[in-house]
View: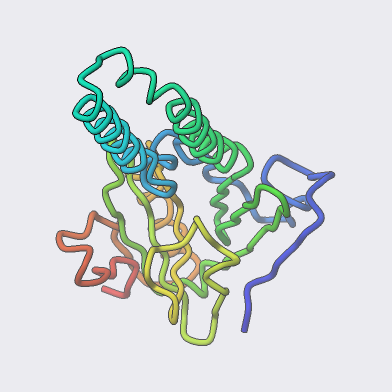
Length: 221
């Protein structure tokens, strides 16, 4: 079973929603990723910047060793530096654009993920099909919320990227990325999930050892 998907978002009935909410459903929270955190964690702009800096340093040292001229050493960087700057600029632009085109919505019935830079797609994830949720530190005071869907509810990893937990390809986990108010969202999600499923749940918490997997929180107590 696949979550409902809509591609008609040029004329949104409401921000982040392709159609008006049905009677009895209300918005609890809406938000977007922090674009700087997204650029750093998803597009690895910091790592690329370090790589470029090392390449420039090597080029400078190599040219100076060959010519013993500071002028020649600096001149050898003249054609490389602009390309490196352009590359970093494009990665930053991707982070900004990805965040700008993303809208996460939590209602009392579901989570709606409107994502996509070129092709905008909306995924409706009913709370009744979410088994658990967990927080993962994202840096700069932000956190990610990873969602574990019930067995049989699958979305292709590439369709969700970058709004998906890394390296979980076989059993994809949609992820609300780089949220500054993730703790608030977690509490709202726990309350809404409990109401929909009729069992108690506690707010998701940051996993102590993310590499070992999730620590389910939205479960019956």
